[in-house]
Length: 321
Ligand code: PMV
Image (cartoon, rainbow, N blue to C red; front, side, top):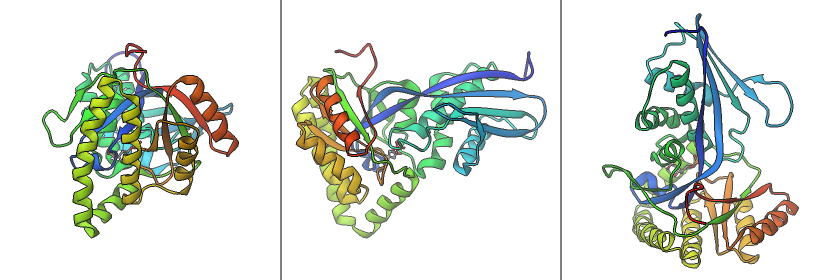
């Protein structure tokens, strides 16, 4: 390593919302994910000495604390190993926010792995193309998601709306959103581990083979129709497809009462469609709404029910709307 010692770098990774086909994407079904402009930020410093320290900064006021999250340590170690960086030959310090695993389902772990990889590359003055960042971050994401499809780290790296099909080469293509999309995100208040939910679905597949293969076929059609609706700007059809996507996720056993309660509320309040997003088992749901003001009203209602919520526009600024 050249230059200053220790040297520091900062990195960012996007969070995301999966509009259709989380979980089934692990088995090669096409899925669509959209970046959310709530980036995960990490600062890394690499200097003389030996060791790995992770400090977590509270979102509200307060002093940073030393991390005790074994998953995060393991993910950092895998990223370091993939980059050929040794904690016995370098003193490595990582600083991050305390929003993991809170609000799970929004790709925070992949955002963390991408932000970490970028921060380390900057600290080491290594130039690293996005594809390499994505590849390294995927190794860290395996800790959080067991058998990750790769959709989360791809959106976290590139920050673009993605059509993702595991097993295809290349596995993703960018798609354009043909309309402004406002969604309400509601948090169940239950952090969940994506890995546990991915394993739950794997058990479902082993024990319900023919139901599972029916779901795979249905979800493949659903994915294609959702893409058409998204590109055409047909919100109403997209919403109906999201509702059907949620019914499949319920069948897979990854929804729960809190998610279903929020989803029923949003539909009753006029959402065009609503579903859990990400791993489920807790975490977040999303509801597609017609505009920001409808979304803000729904946020108020969810908060009165005791669920933290926010209304965001999906996609990047350069996308329409
Ligand atoms: O819970 P999240 O935000 O990490 O999303 C997981 C998405 C899954 O489809 C369940 C897993 C994957 O790797 O695609």
